[in-house]
Image (cartoon, rainbow, N blue to C red; front, side):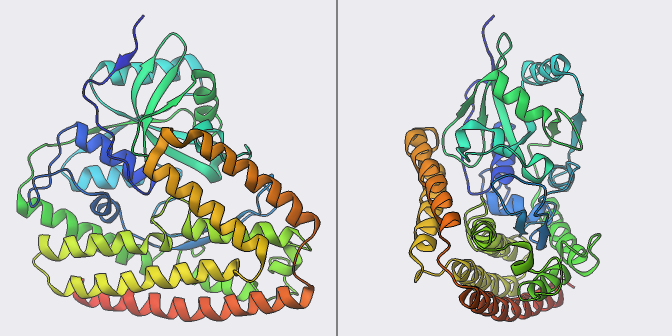
Amino acid sequence: MPPVELPDFKVPGGRHWETAALGAALTYQGVVDPFTGRPPSEAMILGLGGGIVPGYSFCPSTLDRASGVLVTGRTHLIATTPIFAERVASRLGGKIHVSETAGEKKALANLAAVLADGKPAMVWAQKTMLPYLHLGWRDGCQWFMHVVCVHSLDEAGGDVRVAEAAPTSLSVEGTAFAAARADVCSFKNRVVTLDLPTKLTKAAYADAVRAGLADYIDASRRPKMKTFSLIGLREWAKMLTNDKNARGWRRAYSGGELYRALRDAFDSIETWGNGGGNFRGMYAEFLDEAAIVTKTPALSEAAAAHHELATEWTVLADAFLPDRVAPFKKTKTLLRKRRDLFESKGAGADKQLAKITDELAALEIATLADFPLTDAHAADLLADVQAWLGGLLDKEDAALDALEAIVG
């Protein structure tokens, strides 16, 4: 039986797995930005889906070879529902269809049916179990759910080819893909398809952009979970230097374990598939587009402020792993190299990505065994980070206030 493939499928790539996967699906289904004559940009998809409400998650006891620290920079990044895809589709005048099942055979059949119908399949999987990412470890469950766009399936073995942030199609062997789909905690084997209009008026597109902007402001002002908001980030700032609270970093991460927390904070801000700067640069690009689409020049000023925020977040990420500490500097270098290779070469960098993962694993073992900071130096580092984070969050508040004044 030949593979079920979508003919002439293009892989645009990108910087974030879900926006890039949605971009591939929109491109294939012929959705066109009426202002550019091209498919919606990745930045536009980010804005339409709700923007960049930030947050902080802390679960140090749940993961193997990771700290449980995750700094989130995008609305609905770890939502258990397909709300991001639903918001993008609905704002473009369409809708989504969702199927979920606990059965492996039914999961494969659902996927095959979508492709046979000529549509791309948005599929949820456990990130650390996707071999092409070369993350080097498996535990994580729902924490690391990852969205890809499947465009080819070999029903006999379940092998697939998917599109996401890489500029190439990525192959996943059937057994591995089935395991990654089934290992997400709250839902199993989710497949989402998009029903979308291909012709959008400029007026409708402008309304979609305004709805995305309003969504971001509303979610920021009235968060459903305070953890995923600026309020949550301010609580995190307090915990960085709180040695009395069990959630304080020096109590939660003794000795070399602190390395993992510092590394994971840097990674989730800078190299975890967000364009660097915790999505702020991508959102600035959206605001520049929104200024044209909605005929609101002041949004370009907001875009400039968000470009500055992106720089500030990158500086914060670097502060977790200062260059003066040799293993910290090497960690950052390897993480940035892995991100850049994946986003520029995709499958063409497979051997290089595997080598970097091995280097990171060896570096982790060595740094855990011989942590380069004394207790006093660690306290000073966390105090420095806390001070920078506090100033950054003030700037986030100011940028949100300014954007809300423009949007109304």
